[in-house]
Image 1 (tube, rainbow, N blue to C red):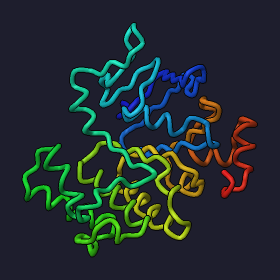
Image 2 (image 1 turned 180 degrees about the horizontal axis):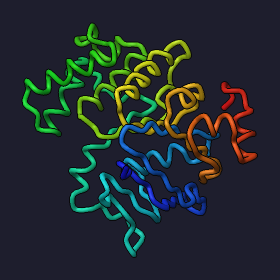
Image 3 (image 1 turned 60 degrees about the vertical axis):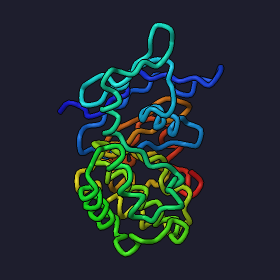
Length: 254
C-alpha cells in the first residue's frame, strides 16, 4: 500500500545544532505511528516539520503520493502548487489546547468546517454533534472552555480536528500537560479513534499506549531514528543498546 504521508531524508538545524539528521518516516492509511524517545531527541520538532509549522533544511514531504514540500536550491522550503488544498487533510493536536475561550464547545467545533472547509451551517452543526459524541462530550456542547477540565479541553481539541475531516492526525504529546488522573480519558478516545481506522502520528511518553495501540513505533535519540518496528518487536526484542537503555528507564522518568 502506498504511504498516505512521507517525510523523506528530512534535515533540520537550529543554528549550528542539527536536530533532525536525515529522518525517513512513512505512514500508511489506518496506521498509528508512535514516536518515542528521550526529551530533546527531536520528536516534537519532527512533528512540527511534518505538519508545516517548522521549516526544514533538506528533504521532502509527501501526502497522497504527491510532493507537499521540498527545499529549493536556495535552501528555502518550497510548497507545491496544490499544497494549500492538501494541507487541509493534515490535522494537529498540541500539548496545549488552543480553544477559543469566548466560544462554547459547539461553536469551537463548528467554526472551521464553515470558514475553512466551506460547509453549510447545517453540515457544520451535524459534524460538531457527531464528533462531540465520538469524544464523549455531548453534554458539554454549550460549556465554555474555562469550565472544562484539561482532559475535556484536550478531547475538544481532538474533536475539532475530527470535524475538519482530516486524513491524518498528528498529536504532539497530547497528554503531557494533563494531571495524571486526566490522562486516561484522552488515551481512551485516542484508542477508539485508532480502532475506527483514524491515521495518526503520535509523539508520546505514554509507553503503554505505544505498546497497545500503535501499529509501528519509531525510537528517536539525538535527532536520529535509532530503531523502528512493530511494537511487539521494538518493546519485546530491541536490537540497539540505546533503545534497550531507554526502555529500561522507569516510565515516569521518560
